[in-house]
Image (cartoon, rainbow, N blue to C red; front, side, top):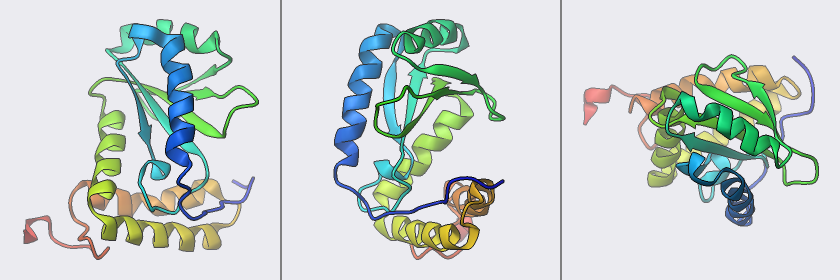
Length: 179
């Protein structure tokens, strides 16, 4: 699939502030429906090169809270787009005029939410692993150009290996039992 080019930029120290402004707006609209609003993705990892798009996961108690989340987000201009091929992760198109971001709603404990948080936390805890991931993303962005799906798929092996603790901080694959 072709479209906008995949552009990776150096870490921007303004990203946490942008997230916080978006978080406050979302949390105010959702009230207690949102158990948490999490900054996920590469922009949530200090020092990591990334696409300049903030990724946000809104955590709800369970799927029964989804209609209230959809209504609350619609009230501030977000359009529900469904799961878009990822079970348990509901995507929302952002209203015009806000910083570029992706917004998802996930039930607490859902596999996709756990995956997002675990990968973010591992990259935050291991700067060498984050650097290896940043270098991979820059190489893949150059290689895939406008093929965002290809770029995303090409990162998957690294992400899955990191989540399975099969990536050492040097960025090399290893046996998870290597201690």
